[in-house]
View (cartoon, rainbow, N blue to C red):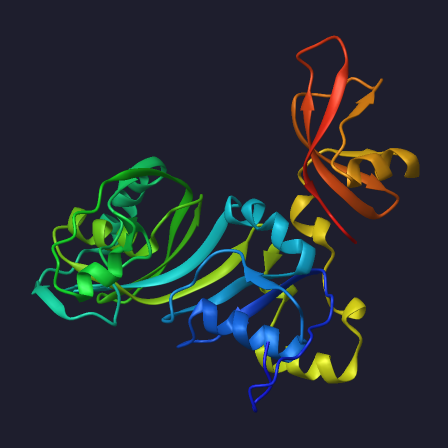
Length: 306
């Protein structure tokens, strides 16, 4: 980290989560950079990319919380979005060039009737302008270079999809979905199903795992907090994203072993899989439970220095 004059600055140790309400026009990496500058934190990352034209919940991980980013990446997300019918765009959102037009506008009852076809486990083709890698290169870089991009279809989970409003030109919808879902693809495919074309003209993520709009703050609010209150008063604990994972309390001596990466044999029977190990409110490690033998063994897979 450098100051405006290019001199290296030593960041502060900050561990935990924040949910930033990302503003329109900023990329996720820009938000991370802004958060790093405002907090002076040593290490900052984000849990799930949002396009510059999208707003809403962008989980920001500080310090040791970056070790738990995969858990927020896998979490259920909720979006509210608007589909504008009548135009197809290269990017499937308002940033791209128009590739097709249609005079057909669906009836409201037809939209309601089509939604069940887009719930459950569905197959979708990601937009060619996406961050997915093809032969080691980002799809959007290839598309911008004029190279033909062929995106492979993949399965995603849509838990719910509902129509919020429709004015005859634009439909506002709400979707709850799993990892890897592209709302732009969902909007594009819905329009095609209705016999027309369309693109996402507005997109807002309202929830990512445990983080909703009520738990989020703006970058302006983060700057204000950084000047008026110590981090421990506004940063959320690392375990915020691990609430669904079974917790096991251990002694200080047992915690010391795990914190050095050593395996721990315990007497308590536990289900096989990942658990979080605690001493009081302190997170020690994420461990894999090995029950293949007669003994129950905890194998550390992530150790936390907090």
